[in-house]
Length: 244
Image 1 (cartoon, rainbow, N blue to C red):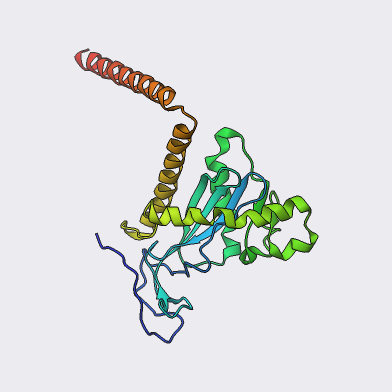
Image 2: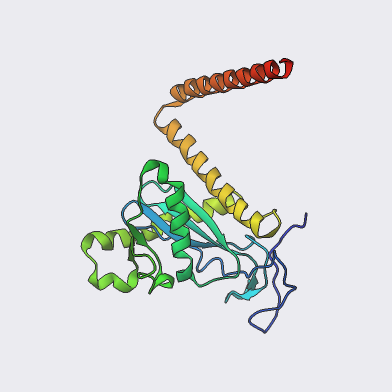
């Protein structure tokens, strides 16, 4: 399975052509634009652009030390208050930011449908301007609307930088900075797995902070016993059917 690494070069063209196949996508700039935009209200939406997040071609990054970076665009939905990852989706081909918001929010809505939570407010950067008509069910906020915002909405917009460290944790602690899986499907699975690991670590820290360790361990043992009992019952039923 091939590995991926950041590659740089003195190319003068804006895009270097590479062989096109089912696993080739376009990279994106990662640092300047790779930020989480907290959605106002309960949720947050962002575009996370990883250096090693996928297969692709080179794109100029605008930095002297990194003239070209290599990756795939990844959108992450983050809760506004607690900072939980509510969705993570990759977009091969380097599409325009405004064109990926609807699909990103759709994934987050599907993942949260068991909790009956709906996304009502979304705080994004200026790359998502002009997409209000494509997302009629959400109130989209960005700096371009700052003068028309209420004080509450301005406070939500100012909290946008509060979730930026989440990207750093995803890359440094959960290995989002480098994808070892092949192809577009591997990119999607890798991003989703990193977000799930982020949530698990968040949950364990919350359990330790609230002093719920004994309760959590007791419930975990009960769940494991119940799962083993179900497996034993199914095995016994299968053996009985085989003997019959």
